[in-house]
Length: 366
Image (cartoon, rainbow, N blue to C red; front, top):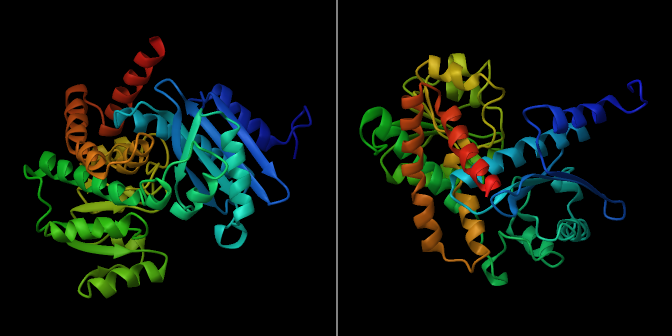
């Protein structure tokens, strides 16, 4: 189907988003194609006001190219806010590679992708995300020096999910402090949806803190990895069962985005939502629905910033303890957001946005 100009409607929608909607405002969007390797990718730079855009590369079998572009736009915008709230001198960017990584990921494709990132001359620094791993970044780095999340053997920081989980745990502790007056999760029931790259590390933090943990994941092997290590851990049949679980104190969405929507929020039993997934709010207004139900929401891009803190540190010669110390500040940042939300009479998500937008605006004005 085409519009009156003969352009596909999907293309018109993308341009409308970029130039006219509140979700737009991106500085640059690059469509990448390498027919020889089968690469089709989108690189979106939302802002470089604070410095070079930094964000991971998602490799995912999108239902359509339109969905891939929309995801790149949303994720890159989120990275601008995440990096600002993490106190990093980086703007926001994100890349998506279209396709099933289990079927089409090859060395040739990753090298081709690296050449596209390199062509941006340092305006975008890439790293791992869903569907990409440390070994993949080692390959990309052969063509692009603006690559982080590499293996220690290749001068990198390794798996960034370690500090991502640590940061989410700090966000949970801050949420507990704000709501119950004690940062400990001991005796609290925490439900984790998605126990893959980040979620399985989060399980360990919570169990060590004395929490009761319930897990679910669409991948049986991910669940099995946890239950083999911790035979007594509870398993929910699916996410729908998990969010309805009786006595749930904290819900941690740690898979893909959109977990908080018009269907899930009304039936959610938890008093706190704090998880690693990006773009948890499926549409504007969900944050108010959570607040109206008395559910405390720890903004996703604030609490899951440990990973980007880790890969950003890699650019300066990685030091794990230095990165962990910076990620531990997510506790204080989260508390400050809750305080701002209370003072301004707005949901925490809106408070975080205001703080991030202020930092970006001040940087643009300099």
